[in-house]
Length: 377
Image (cartoon, rainbow, N blue to C red):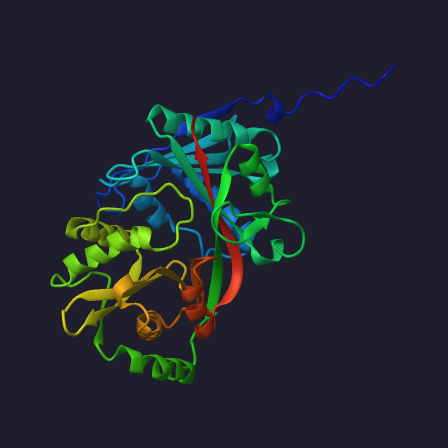
């Protein structure tokens, strides 16, 4: 007699459920108001485990206070987070972000499955759920991204970016998943890491080479909140930044920034425990703010600094302002956050000018990020 088939496991019998995750309002004695739900904590734990497995650190992972602030959303973007369970076991998450002021035809999509539960169709189910939310809100252009560590990009075939430069390995599971789901790789960004502290003689030499071309400008800077006399000019720069950097064929419109939006962003960062250092360049003749760069630091991940925006307006390029604001801001960051041992930055592969500045400062490649897009029919 043949041996009987084994009894189905509890996991095989479990039903997949996808439920919305609520985030408590930003109020109450313990930052975040009411106690966090088990569902939100499960989503955060899934994200932390994913980052540790992929990178071996949490440099790219939001801290819990950051995540709370982000998923509350704001007047400029609505954000929805969903937890997937098999029975009672959390196995994955998906999310949908919906711009509310501009780019209202777009939605940001993300899917994450715990490693033990991959290749079982759960990713497809979560993606269908997220896309369904976007469709129901009338969104016709979906965007998504993911990062690949440097060692996974070496050797093998690359899927080239459709309208940018560079490519991602075709054998990467996330690449294969995105392609099978109808997403196109529009742009590839390089992530790079700079070891801190940067030797002062290196910064001095670079500054000496750049300063003679920037005699018409002075540098200013601030921590965490922009001075009121500069905030309108800063808002204009941030609006320019939204489309002035290379965006390849991504279906994004210019963002409308004003002083209220700057203050909203600053307060959200501070509530999430994020500190910021900003250096900007001022044109002496006009008093106009013409360049800026931003670094962020979290006490929850004290060894890592994240490079955010860097912009020089078009009419003031060629004066080495990008190099000068970055040097000044690195000095500001090293003095303010002495525990930091590295800076992470991201640049479009086609943005050769900014890549050249970063390489001169000592940044080394760390990985690649794919920017994906799907148009809904």
